Image (cartoon, rainbow, N blue to C red; front, side, top):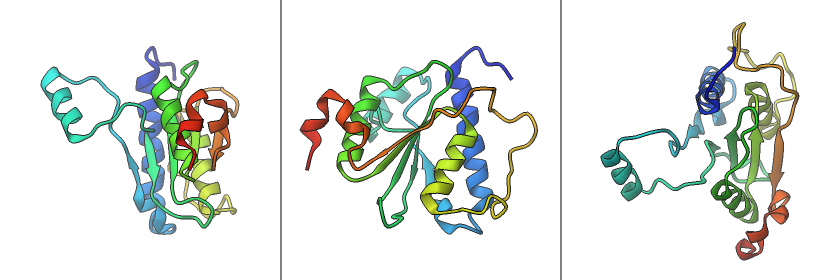
Length: 166
């Protein structure tokens, strides 16, 4: 499936990841606490003003799994498509999260995002989780490019990371 607007593709991939998590939360209860951060999208001026007043913050990653896996307290995930890259605000958020001891992941496919969740939760058996992605999923032919960082990994690459060290 080809999309003219990468953001629309990212939204569809994210929705597929959430659908997968919701369908597997009975087997893996922490998946219940995977949630979206509605920072992106187009809104009318009044809605944008209210969202800003309510605390919407540019750069915060798309998805958060609020679960301490023993190594990291939280997994933050950003969905990207095609040639999209992290914005400056997203790089700053990533550096901050990593310096606070959280794991971050940037994923370019639904399968990569699901694999990040599986790895984070220690789900080893590929048959243990029901696959709800039907034929014609949001994947495309891109190879695996997922970037995973935690505890400072990629934060060192960001020029402003030093200001967030503990």
